[in-house]
Length: 193
Image (tube, rainbow, N blue to C red):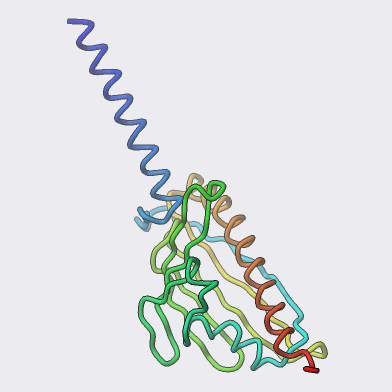
């Protein structure tokens, strides 16, 4: 009888371990979003400020083009527009995680207010709440792009810990995206010939 109980205990432990591993993978990849509204904690994202040697309209167009126009082939593995309107889209962003072995998927609405603002709101992802904005201001260099946002998690300190881990990766991804925007906008603004 005790051997059977021991086997049941091992089976339960293995099942619980598998469930926890599945939940973790679901959270990391955004496949199992947890939004229970209990113990919500928020934290800022950014600010990140970038000076771009290009006109504000050019910078806006560089950010907006993959969403409002045709998504370039080079970006199709990272971005898929699910629904497109004249000033707002629903888009899935694919980001490699775990050394490229997994792919996190976030779904966001992206609203465009020409020529100075682009707003992002998370619909599905590894945390229940993210709002972000790119604000484009004219500057001596051409354009100053300011990124700011807020990330929210549930479950008090456990959520706060998870939010810190997600925010670090999130802000690194945004910084890389901003570097690409800067390079493309400055390339477009460079004198020809």
